[in-house]
Length: 329
Image 1 (cartoon, rainbow, N blue to C red):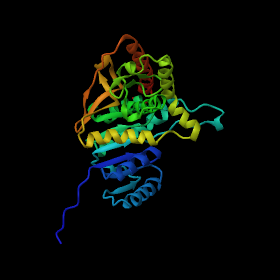
Image 2 (cartoon, rainbow, N blue to C red):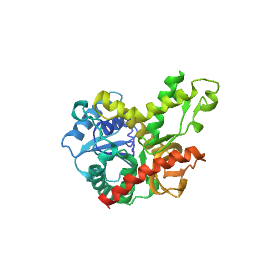
Image 3 (spheres, rainbow, N blue to C red):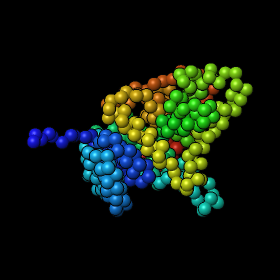
Image 4 (cartoon, one colour):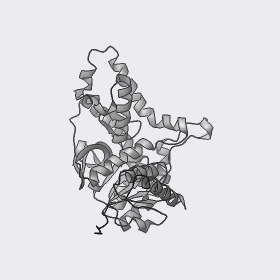
């Protein structure tokens, strides 16, 4: 019988094998997209998840390899690295106190990202890196600075997740499938995110036009924006853990656009050097992702009210980034 060479898959490594890392690795493995390495500092965690995922994909005849490790050198020569390592927002004292604020995560997660950046620089300096660790925009900026990777090879998973939530809530309000809704959410991945209603569409019709004539137009929009901003905190309150299904799916979307050269426009946090009149900050904006990473940063023509909201968002990111400089740099 003639023997054919084994199919060669790209290599995707996850730094952090918790809920997001494990879920995204599972989604990726089920699609036979890449050989996967799950890294974590917790002994046994990545090995156990790798074994479980490997058994799951064997049901469908999966071909990719899945490795769990506590050794950074195993991420060598990765094509894509997805960083989920770090503390997450959780419920304090049995609901007696609110979830952790993103700013509270800054100091400890900065130290984790520093370690991660050093090892990626050492073992996989040519990888395309997707950062999910919070506060996301600040951590993306810190990783890019410490790793020295080109800015087009580093993004934060930001607006893609926020936009998916916006589309879901708007679809529920309008009775329309979310797949037929297109939205733009820029700025901070947090409370100061900026939903751009003017650029949003339903069935390719501008949202403003789609809602034209409805007496409750403003109520619908404000309600959807409120739910979108509060979705992360609401999930924490409900299940005492941060979201992971949607973030994992959003990260997979970015990775696929890079690996398959889709040239897809995705809302990501990326380093701006003059775009939108912003310098040396990672901010969520629409970018084109292809085989060379961020191929293009799309600059939207913002109106005055949108610029004001965006500026508030920028100031929030700037505050965290300035604090980071004092802590780490």
